[in-house]
Every structure is written in C-alpha cells, then in structure tokens.
Image (tube, rainbow, N blue to C red; front, top):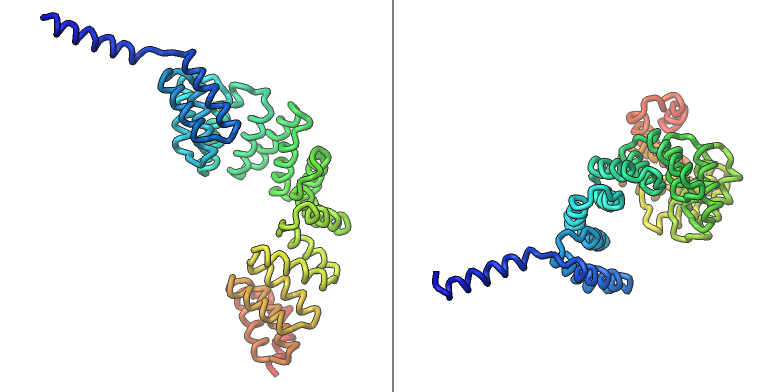
Length: 345
C-alpha cells in the first residue's frame, strides 16, 4: 500500500470513527437552546435546535422527547409518535414518554394503542395522578365507564384537589345516568375552579334529570354568564323554560342556540313548540318543517306540525302529518286517534 492510499484510508477511518462519536455536552447545549426558543414561541428555531441535539447525540432521549412533543403541538402526530418511540427505545422506564405518545394516539383515535401507553405510564409511575386520570379517560373513550370511574377515583385519592379527575368522573357518571353522583362531582369541580362554564352547564343538566329544575336554572344562568357562546347551555335552559310554560324565554334561548350553530332537528322542533304555544303557528310550522328536513324520521316534529296545521284550520296537512307519525310509531295511534278523526271530517 503506497503512502497516498494509506493516508486516504487513515482519513476515511478517522471520518467514520468521528461520525460515530457522541458529544453529550454539545447536544445538551442545543437542547437547552431549543427549550428557550420554544418558551419564547420561536418554534421553528426550537425544532432546528432539537434536531441539532439529536444529530450530535442520537442517545439524547430528552431531545427526542422535546422534538416529539413539539411535532404533536403542531399537529404533526406521526412524526411526534416516531420521535417519542425513539425516546422510549432509549429510556423505556420513563413514564412521561409513554404519556406523551398516548396523548398523540388519543388524538388519532387509536384508543387501543393509547391504552397500551397509559398502562405503561401508570406501571412506571403508579402514584402520578395525571397518568391514572388519563388512563381513566381512555377507558371512557372505550365506553368502559365503570373502570374509568375507578381510575378517576384513584387519581382523586392520590390528589384530592385534582379538578380534572372530578370533572372526568362526573362525565362518566353522567354517561351511566348516575345524576346524583354527577352533580356531586361537578360541585367539587366548581369549588376547585368556579370559572368553567361547562361545569355549571353539566351540573345543571344533572339537576334537571333529577327533576330539580330550580337548581338547574341558576346553573345554566351561570354557565351563560361565563360563556355567552355556550350553545348547549341555551338549549338546556330552553327546555327548563318549555317545561315551566315560560315560552317567550324558551323561544329566546332556542333562537340563540340555533344562531350559534346548533342547527339540528330537536332544536328547531323545540323552538317550533315555543312558537306554537305562543300561537305563532306559521313560525311554528316553518320550524317543524326545517326539523323534518334535517331528520325525516323525527316523529315529534310531524306530531307537533300536525297540531299547528290543525290550529291553523289546515286539516288535510294535519291529517297527513299525524298519519306519518303513526306510520313511524304505531304506538301513537291511541293518543292521536281522536285528532285524526276530527281532521278527517
């Protein structure tokens, strides 16, 4: 081997050897710089620094983690999962890595993989209320509300002031129609954070289902005061007004909900019912018609529109609507029979 060839291979060997070297100290500097950029909202610069940290030291699990979380925050979920998987391969005992990847899987509606990650997170750090609560949330997404409640209760046992665990458990109780438990949990959540409109709205809904209308009403009022764009609160309060014969107030609430975008068949039907009870039959018929257009199988709208037609002395259309309603729900025949006979004359 001549000197030139030897020098070439020596330099090549040095280059290859140099490429495999880690420089943890230099990598950490880039990582620190990336965190500083991210805290300042300079996300592109942060991404470059995390990538530089990884390039210098492929074993820098925190850099993989930070870049993965940044990808997820920018809705680049697959890249985020890839980076977090690298972090987990390097450090398989870090609960927070599983937690972050589990969140990405939840966002992708891959609840099976999310559950695997939260099982791992809880296994690695069983006293962390956040991970237990989030595993409960995945159980709830899988509609296993009973197991979800157990996790939420465990999270509360670990941290009795954990607001999210109370609200999450309250929603699971709601899904199981355990309205008293639901109301109790949202009462606690409200004590911990009195500024969340959704807490008052949900507790109001639980009260309404417990027939505690006069407890529900101030909760809906408070929810709307905190968030004037919370359409569900207007809908829920509107039903309280309908059930207490306050039709003008009901009309206002359903009108507001519809204007906020809740343009579904039940809401048009409910507003139509308010119009009907205010003897504004033309407006009622228009709303019932809209309800039927949105859902041709919404029987209540046919029944109600039939009464508005009947009260407008339009018997043929009343008869047609009531017959359609009975066709959809034969059990209505007995309650509508006398009206169908009157409309037939």
